[in-house]
Image (cartoon, rainbow, N blue to C red; front, side, top):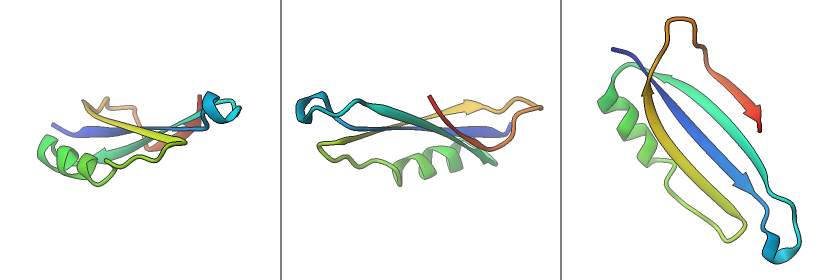
Amino acid sequence: MKYMLIILITFGSPVIGEKQKTFEMKIPQESKTQCEKSAKTFSFGLPIMKMETRCVPRREDEDAEMVRT
C-alpha cells in the first residue's frame, strides 16, 4: 500500500504578537516504513515554528501538494 506523508508547519507565536500561519505539505511515499523514516527527518522545532508529521494511506486520486491553511 502506498502512503502519504503529511507535514504541518506552523509559523508565528502569540507570545511575540505574531498571528500563526499553518502550511500543509503532502509527499507521496512508497511504503509505511519509508513514510515513517521520512517523517523523522522533519522532527525539529524552534520557538516560533512548530512541525507535526503523520503517515496516512494514500488515496488513488491524491497527489503531492502544499496548501496554506
